[in-house]
Length: 68
Image: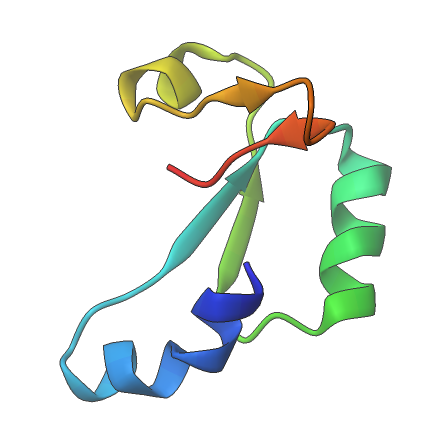
């Protein structure tokens, strides 16, 4: 996510749009999003179907989900 935030303007200048989809509860996702001041759209999804379709992996060693 930090890399997406850092490169956000490059995506915008090429007319691409970043969208992050989070599986956490509304409150946890919003708090994290606000704390890190992400410059692109973030959305919550309750179902893991979209995460599976995009190939997001869960790495237990890294204690969380990996970007997809």
